[in-house]
Amino acid sequence: MSSGAKIVTHYIKEVVPGTTPVAPAAGAWKTMRVTGNTLSPTPDTEISDEITDSRISQGSVVTGLTIGGDLTGEMSFGSFDEWLEALFYGSWTANALTIGDTRHTFSVQKGFTDIGVYSLFKGVHAATGSIDIPEQGKVILTIGGQALDYEDAEASFVTGAAAPTTTPFMSSLAVGDILVDGVSLVGQACVSAVNIAVDNTMQVQRCLGSGKLGPGALIATEAAITGTLTLAWSKAAWLIWKEQLSRKPFSVVFPIKDSLGNQYTFNFPSIEIDGELPNGGKRDIIQVSLNYTVAKIAPTITRVPFVAVASVSVAPTSASIAVSATSQLTASALPAGSSQNATWSSATPGVATVSASGLVTGVSVGSAVITATSVSDPTKTSTAAITVTA
Image 1: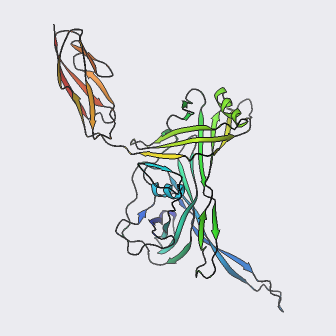
Image 2: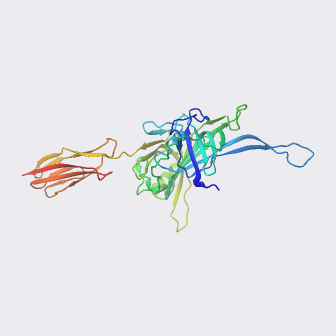
Image 3: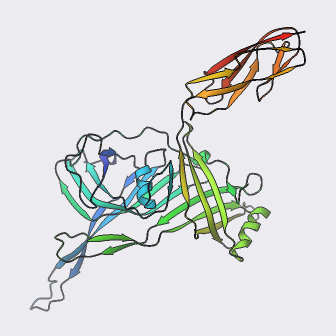
């Protein structure tokens, strides 16, 4: 008997849409982190209308093959970046991704490894996609795939697959401060859920003489980007809601950060909202669902990978100051892309104190050691020797 734990999904990026790369380099195939894979070929059939000497149906004929389904996974940093490119028809440039016109396709193998049956979907396009951030729970990414061709075998099509990523999956607690027109909603309007949906309005083109049952081409047209913001009903929420009458666009920006510090920032420069006035009983928490549509300006996703702090240094490493005088210390971390935030402390505050910004003040004659500690990695520290004179 087969089990869901034995359905393994691998994918490889194609150079020619619908053509699986031959003998790819080791690691070109990648193991996909999914919670579900509903990719499947579905025959399109027509029943015969022939009139014969029998009342029995004369059978049917296959007229085409609809090949598609959903790839669903728990959002984790770096695990689905290639699929986000395909969904946005764009490419990551300087760690930023926006809507473009570049098509990215994949060959995807759905392997039933315990019974030795393997299905290969070729020319898989990201026709639709969604990111669901619930009130409480995991952030879920769903890619609605459509494919150009299909085949299966009793031997795997995959060779030398790279292991799956290991970054932690994200939850609703990973969402940072939500800004509407640059203003934080913290304390003004509680956002309890967010949904982002992308529909590339994929059109299927059938081609006679192609030699395959699948479509001859899949053509993306308008990129329709919509979603839902669920807010606790408040005056701030009302002020946002009422702008549907004026069609005033809003900007919405928010980050999602995992437990390691890796972050995606979602920036919607211009959205229009719609929604009905909320309703509820006397024991209900009143919430309003605002449906939004991206208008005129494409959204952007920016990825910010966490860079571990390797070392911390303090400048100057020593200083001599008089009682009541001050000296400014600065802390810097390496590598340059790591967090530069540090906390300051004095081993002998009766001799010298230090502020949160590294400003040292002499208190009495003597010696003091001032320590800077990395916020992101408290094991990384550096010190300065301070001498206080009369």
